Amino acid sequence: MEKNQQILLAARPQAQVELSHFKWVEKDIEPPGESEFLVRAHYLSLDPYMRGRIDEAKSYAAKVELGAVMVGTVVGEVIVSHHEKFPVGSFVETHTGWQLYGKSNGAGVRLLPPKPVPLSAYLGAVGMPGVTAWIGLNEHGRAEPGQTVVISAASGAVGSVAGQLAKLKGCRVVGIAGGQAKCDYVVNELGFDACIDYKKNEALTLSERLAVACPKGVDVYFDNVGGPILNAVLEVMNPFSRIALCGLIAGYEDPQRLAVTNFRSFLVNRIQLRGFICSDHRPLWKPALEALAQGVASGAIRYRETVAQGLQAAPGAFIGMLRGENFGKQLVKLI
Ligand SMILES: NC(=O)c1ccc[n+]([C@@H]2O[C@H](COP(=O)([O-])OP(=O)(O)OC[C@H]3O[C@@H](n4cnc5c(N)ncnc54)[C@H](OP(=O)(O)O)[C@@H]3O)[C@@H](O)[C@H]2O)c1
Image (cartoon, rainbow, N blue to C red):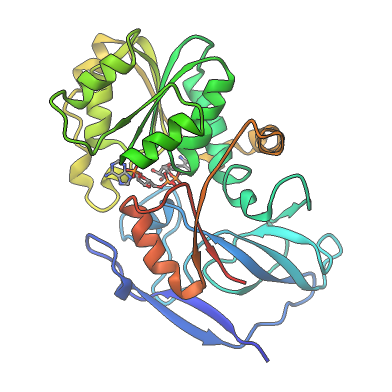
């Protein structure tokens, strides 16, 4: 009989995450109890928030205990069920973590329609990252047609959707991404107006290059990274502009990198900065997911995935994502 495979947190990183912080184990599959069901995972989502969950530092969510299965969301098929709402053969999005099989009582589980999008998209553009983009742009950025929106980590799961939503609203959209290939994709395939490769050595500084790409200044900055890129964008923000602070990936392994050197810009430009966490906005998920599913099904919202093969590849793919090696949504295929 097939066994379950799991990835456990073996040690807490002091700075950079390494493979030795994780442990792969095999064990018996736990049968579901009364009012529970068993899911065979097809795809595991790897997300930057997981870096915060393996640290000692206090955050907005509980940390993963040493020896516990790594936290994570999967999409998969119900293969045994004692729960009438989740029959055998149905597909779900659930939070069973880095393992092949997991049981659930249905709390927080999303039943997935077979159409209109591929299963893996429910972890990306039509899942948490897409909803995050929708909330950040519409609720916090409040981008208006004709305004200029800048988006960092622009080719990634959240940034790519945020930029396309801003384009659909009629904004000028400028991405920031690491490398020419990512920038070409952001402009040529996602339809952003411009994209700046922040890793490229140029005579102009990043803020000077932003000023060229944003001749009318920046009205909304959708910030996925913080750190030096935030400091550069602060140079070109308009009076009464907004920053939707979504993530700080530049500092997840070294918070020192998040120092704000351009604090004066907040006062001079009366900038409104709002940090947000997608799970605080549950009532918005339904309309957001409906709009995103429609956008993906119609081709108005496009996405790209980097897919690692097999559970044992998850730690390496996670480390790679923190270093920018992913191109689009980072997934692990488990079947
Ligand atoms: N607030 C919320 O509720 C919420 C929800 C989901 C995600 N987030 C945050 O949103 C951000 C993006 O998440 P995602 O899932 O879409 O990941 P992602 O963009 O698909 O992948 C992470 C990307 O971050 C970029 N990056 C890594 N280190 C960087 C650095 N030092 N400076 C600049 N960019 C760096 C890399 O792209 P480049 O190659 O372009 O550098 C990398 O590919 C993360 O900060 C995440 O924590 C927040």
